[in-house]
Image (cartoon, rainbow, N blue to C red; front, side):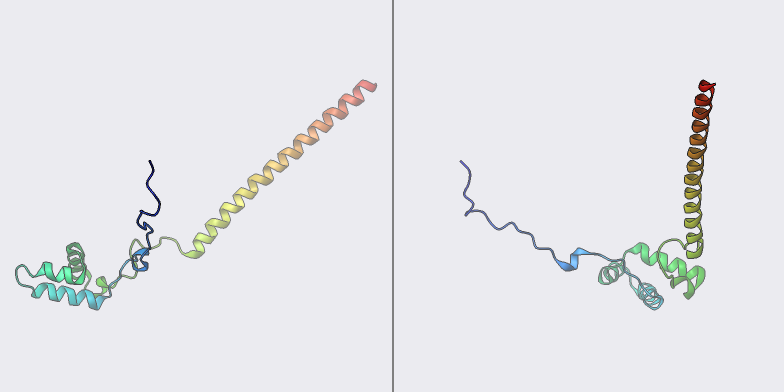
Length: 134
């Protein structure tokens, strides 16, 4: 026998706006320098507490140390994650227009081929009709 609907609990889930969309955190060079200095000043066993407090991972700190050692403060001030764009927006637009041009050229060539075929068929039909009359 099925259970009654009245005895069921409310199973409706309400979304939490803070958990809906996560965004990538970005850190400025001053913050990175401060974290490197604080990590350097930590005694044995205190580094984990610092990383937990700041919600960082150890690899972030090691990456920042490496970037600072290689390029100084300029190495810490990256603009955006990921590789730099290889092509400029103008170059991307040129590529897009060239693709469109080649597509339209293929379409035009197909239309010309269709017209040539129609001309040949008309010529053949005209030749057959003229040849049978004579």
